[in-house]
Image (cartoon, rainbow, N blue to C red):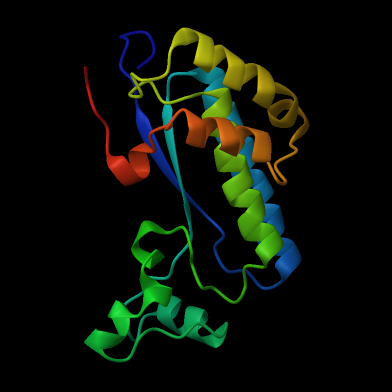
Length: 173
């Protein structure tokens, strides 16, 4: 795709349940390493990251595994209107008992660092200077896998109104 100047978009879901918290974290680390390999091959690749949220059908093996882990789906249609479920469909607040806050923070921190290291090509508000500044600030974190509390990057992304394609969709000039 790179050869033909096609920008692929790949979505990744991180944080699937596993037998132990260590296995969940190991899978998250492997997923991050894989995403970084993809960016090495084609830096223009758009990467969308989601935190796993169960959407298993009742009675399926996945449903049994998820509910056995302590996850509880809303029981009535009105229950989905509760504010606690508002971000569930965006897969940003998964409400999953097997994911510790450290795991969710790692996933979301990686997303912030990745978006600063490789800003989406569809954000036309970002000038080349802004892109370079974000890349410089995120470089150390990205190379050393330091994703905890990327506050400096979040401040820049908020200040410059960095567009999030997974929430806002993609826009072409």
